Amino acid sequence: MSRQHAGAPVPSPCFKPALSIPQPYSPQAGVNTHVASAPELFCHRTLTTAHPIGGKAWVDCPTDWRAPFLLASTGAWATFPELEDSFIYNGSGVVPGRTWIIAPDADSLQRRWQTLTGAPAAEKETLFHPHLLKEGLGDRHTKRVVSLALAGFEPRPLPIADEHGACSPPVRYGFRSFDRQWIIPDNRVINRPNPELWAMRSEQKVFLAALSRTSPSTGPALTITGFVPDLDH
Image (cartoon, rainbow, N blue to C red; front, side, top):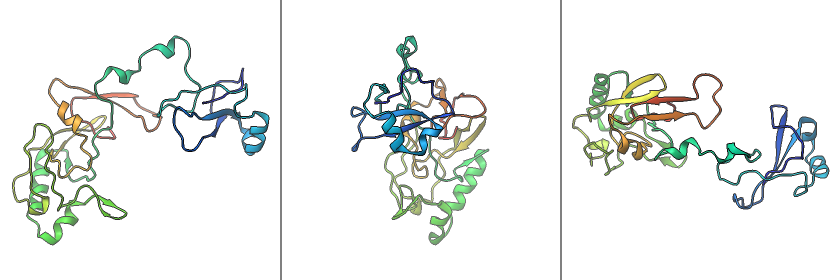
């Protein structure tokens, strides 16, 4: 739960939340938070002595997993449906994992594909730019077999290391909010394609993209694209 002293001002840049999180954490267990002024933050002991956790000076905050550590909404505003509740999908955009599969024109992608598939076996992995983890190769590398194709595209059961066929025809792609590019729609070369997005792709579909990892400092809060969007659209 979140607790704030009765009559305290709404959190602003001058106020910082002090948190006490139970372990292991669950939304039902709650989080104790007190919105404290900067001088109070110099010593957690001083803060908890002045405002004991669980005391009457604290109020509950939302218990949803992704809810902010702020006071729960009240009044009519709290009853309004969230924008994301109006859509059948709410998730991240595509995470390509490599830049060579995206270009301003389709011909460039065809030439890059020919360079990759025609390269000596010892050079293919370097040209591919594999997904790397601390312990070694990740989800996408030249020897990985990816049996499932993106919705609407032909399956390519061969690993890239053995591939000598033509490139999947590039399609338009929502690379950035005002930057439409082309991408190779091959599940073998995209780290996290988010298949739901490709399954919904059509000429009658539009995607709304909004920044959720951080608060936008400039520019529009919401953009629209008719193409499958990138994570950073």
